[in-house]
Length: 283
Image (tube, rainbow, N blue to C red; front, side):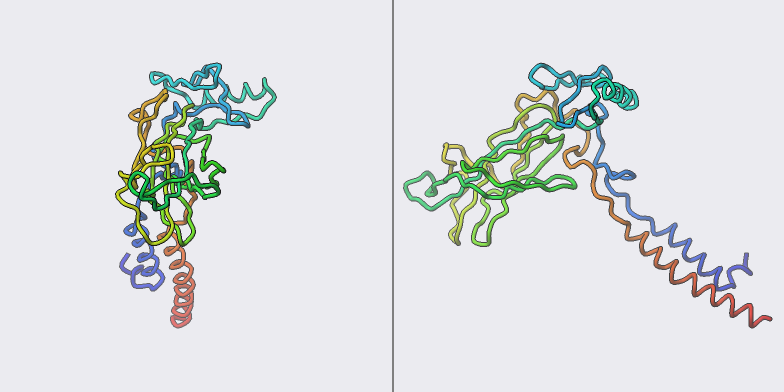
């Protein structure tokens, strides 16, 4: 063993192996498959191409005539059985079906532009604003759409977990209440009343609690989180970890793995040359 470590190649390989053992990549959320947080297997359902849930005996969800999903908290879903039954139903219906996390939640809201008006409550009057990009973001994803002509916006087919709303504004406009978050549960329900306000110019609006939307509703504060899921068939305490909203995070290469690969690519050829020279000098 002592003779081995006197050889350059042996020393270099030993150092590289030691680095591989000592410099361990930090554990990332969702490893090894990059799924964010723990996912409750009972939230998996068989769905068709239009994201409609196919009611099966092996899932934990019962679908009523309106399409609403009722969640059975006491049932434990076997994913293998669910996949098999979903495949059988696919053959029976002659339609493409897949196993997905239930994504039926809907969120609705309005974009409001505020203007200085001493006669209005709080000295600022709000008007609904059209064509303003509303950005919805969650773990591993971001989507946006413009507000309609009445200032309204909505997002359908959302899974379980926190999703955050912001406005994408031009340089002369400023958000009043950024980072409004809604915690959805993925089931058939609607969270409404998400008001996102902004103003233009350099004059700041007064205390946000003193201004109201055109229909008299106070704006939610910046960094506010809605957690009251009215009409929900599930409770937040039953959701496990982070959500299915963003699905799977994009796989990122490990910096440590890349560094180790570079070391190996550079060091091993050099070590090989040194070994050949040593062998020639000994001969």
